[in-house]
Every structure is written in C-alpha cells, then in structure tokens.
Picture 1 (cartoon, rainbow, N blue to C red):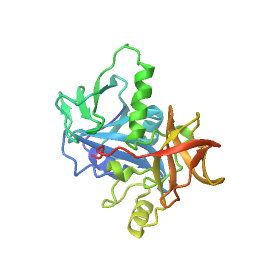
Picture 2: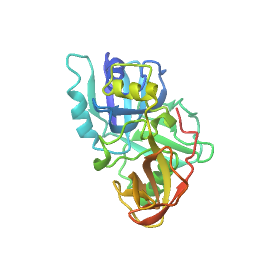
Picture 3: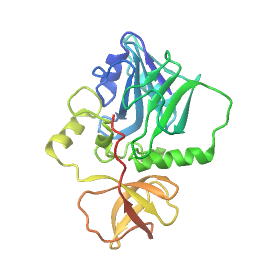
Picture 4: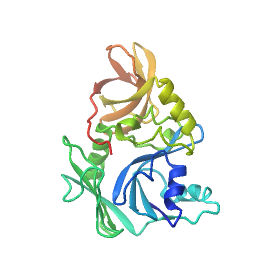
Length: 267
C-alpha cells in the first residue's frame, strides 16, 4: 500500500493517474491506473481519498516499494511525499460491508478503512488496518483472485505490464480511467482511442480446461486470436477481438470456454 500525502498530494495524483482525483470527495474511493507515456498500463489499483492532503493506493499486484520509488521521480518541487505504508495490512471478506457502500468508504481515521469491493452477485469487503503477524490463507487468496477475474479486474504479473491500454483491459467497466481530464501520462493516446472509436480488442473471461500462464496464446480455428493476460485457477482474462465468430476457442491447444463477466464493480 502506498500513501501520497502533503499539501500538493491531490494535484500530484491528478497529474499522474488516469482518474479524476479532484472530483472525488474525502472518504471516497475508485479504481484507477497508472500508465506509461505510450498509454500502456503499469498498475491497476484502488485509490482512496482519505482527506484533502492524503490519498492511499491499494495495490493488489506489483512491488509497492518500487512503484513508490518510480513515482518519487515526478515529485520535483511539489510539497508531497510518496511513502510505503508497511504498517497497514489489507484483509478481505466475502460478504456485504458493514458500513461502506459502493464508492463511499467507512473510515475511522486514516488507519481503519472499510471498502465495498463487491457486487450484488458477489458481495465482498476490503479492510485496511494495522498490520498483524497472522498468516494469509492461500485458499482464500486464490478464491479472492478468481472473484477479481470474474468481475473483470486484471491482475497483472510482470510480463503483462506495459503491454495493454486501459481500453484493452476493460477498465472502463470499472470506471478506472478518465477521458475528460488531461495531463496524465498516456492521456492523449487514451483519449484518441476513446473518441475515434479504434479500440478493437477488449478483456474477456475464459474458463480453462488445462493450466495456462499469462502470455499464452488464445486460438480459434487453428489461428492466433488473442493473449491471456492473467490466470486464477481455471479462470483467465484474455484480450480478444471484439468481433469474433462463435467457433470454439483454445488456449495453448486446450479447449477454453467464454464466460460472462460480472457487473456491478464500477466506482
């Protein structure tokens, strides 16, 4: 987890991330992404506006310390600090939140926060609080990761970063980027793709019949069709053309079946 704090925190975030931080009220959150200058996605995360001078970035994937170091290069003379919050821990629960609702977080100060990260079909709650020595449950983590994929939340391993535009990753379904604000890395490419309607590929959910790895080829009629972006058990998210036939799909030669994505996670 990363914290961006200081008098210029919101302006700094506004200039770096592909979402409108200034339009978000204190105690609210939304999905966001950090892009390269070429409009390729480096990270997908939850951005929580704790107050007028602090935001938190909740990163499910990637080296938060390394990302903090990279962001620090953009601080220049701004009165802002980018830091790793290793004193906080993220916990999840399958079930509706107690107080939080959609984009509105439930907060007790800045160190105990509840987020609504589920949908009517699959309610989930996320808690940010003091770190503890309690070990994680691998089975729960695997189930949580599958729930992310079912909602169309891409989980990017190193090989899949800097490969995809936010449109190709379907981040519009999450409200994960803005085409109305400017001045963030990759904004011109994101806006051009949006307004000219040239996005020809998007994220789709597949059920696998055999194990696969991110980067695996998705084929149809013995021809390459797309690429697997992330995998969780027997589920995968793949970037595929928007217009394809109904012919069967395969991943690395093994059958794969399309599944509908769950709605309701946009914030």
